Length: 89
Image (cartoon, rainbow, N blue to C red; front, top):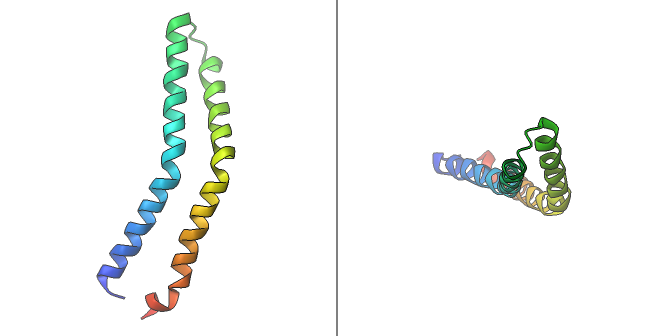
């Protein structure tokens, strides 16, 4: 296996991890901003009020994006395992 092949595998792995995490991070970021703005507008500084909506939004996002994330993960695993003979050289 050449160093270029290793770099390509690592690059593909990091890009897959990025694309799997990015939608959830964006949803969490937006939910955090919205909850913070609501807290500022209402002057409510309760920890439960800031945590529970973020967790609910994050859970809904995970459930909504799970089929896409599984398809993306399976596609990556198939491409890596499909080329296993190529990597063994």
